[in-house]
Image 1 (cartoon, helix red, strand yellow):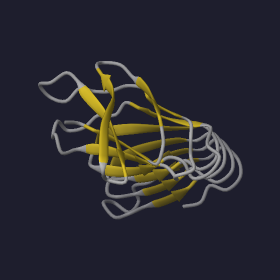
Image 2: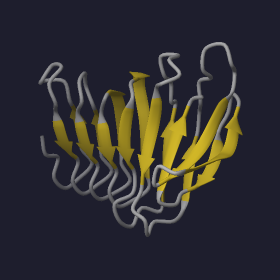
Image 3: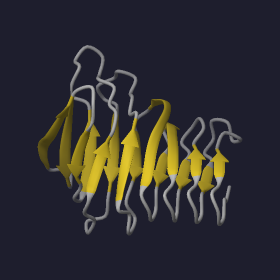
Image 4: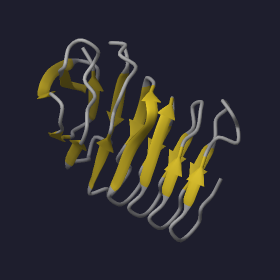
Length: 163
């Protein structure tokens, strides 16, 4: 589904549990992924992308917000593809399984601030550790998040992992 120029509202879901692909185009677009592994592209502008299931989202250029709409399964999120100033993920919740995680991928030349606005604590622990994993090797805890948010610097790859 293509939004084109202007401020568009696009909703996935017509494919049921199959993959829907949504392109917002130019403008301040709002895209909703449905069930299944949908793919959402904000393209240009300050977009808001709602993820659920196993969606993969790309904001494109602009200051984009990524929000979960219900429980969020293990998934990858590509935040920066070019000249994003920053991106925000709000209301990240998982199903309480310690293997659930949110991956944030950025190109190796990207810099800026990634903001995790609201975090639901894992069942029974009350705390998230936020780790930086670069090229699958070095692992460093860069923030502890308790009932709030954290501003993080992004480098090559940033993975938000419940441990």
